Amino acid sequence: MIYRAFRSLLYIPAHVEAFVAKAAKTEADVVILDLEDAVPPSQKEKARQSLRGAARYLHTCEKSVAVRVNNADPLLEEDLKAAIDAGADVLILPKVEDPEFVKEVADFGRSAGCGDLPLIALIENPKGLLNAPAIAAAHENLVALNLGTEDFCLEMGMEPEWDGLLFPSQQVVTAARSAGIIPLGYAGSIAQYHDIGSFSETAERSAKLGFEGGFAIHPSQINPLNSAFTPSDDAATQAKRIVDAYERSMSDGLGAVSLGNKMIDLPIVEKARRVLQVKSRYSGHGKRH
Image 1 (cartoon, one colour):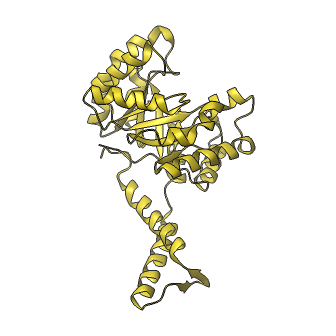
Image 2: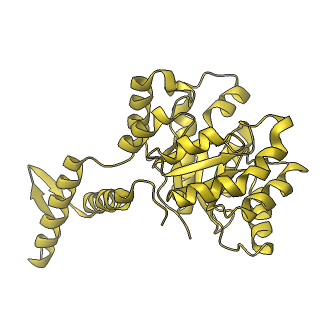
Image 3: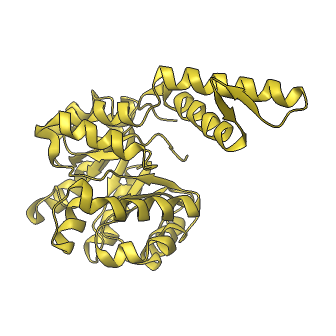
């Protein structure tokens, strides 16, 4: 199973039952049971032990479940075993710096009998960004690439704001698109949940860069993400008009057509078809596929 509804991915600490229950009631496309940054060292083992029950409950609520693992031994191997045992739908790999890490995790999954387990790589430092094209193409199990802005900005000594994040965001989108995988992220701070208006604006602007979804740390961020990364009804209606007009033109033996004082040719039609595809994809609102 490769779950491709990635508009909104909500982080929750795996060991806090109350957060699991709340996450199940949200419209998040994916709930991430976190074993990394959201879990203090003293609670790592408890978080791993909590995975199976939490994942089972979320699956019962028809949620897709991801697990973010730690990226270094000795935690990594234990995290991977626990995530696979819990039946995770997706693995989130943090602080990826080179393609070898992706390959190693994919090989581990294959040896554990999960040969097609989907992976998402997080680019969170300068080295990772420089290697983004190679990381994006590292393995067939890698389905998405994300720019983790908080860690990245910490490493860069910059603020997680639009101006500074625009170029690295474009680099991540380009790397993901070149490898045929999904670009995730937004050119702003994940911690911006106290100002949902600004967060919504950042997500909407980021969708225009080519991102298809983003991560959240608070339920209030879910609806803005879902809205930003889902074509509006008006956009879908216009896209259908474009596709229909072009197909009529093709049946009449013409290669292009004018619609609303605008020339419609193949690139515009392909973009319209993508809008319709994305609109259709998200009719399930976070249910498992």
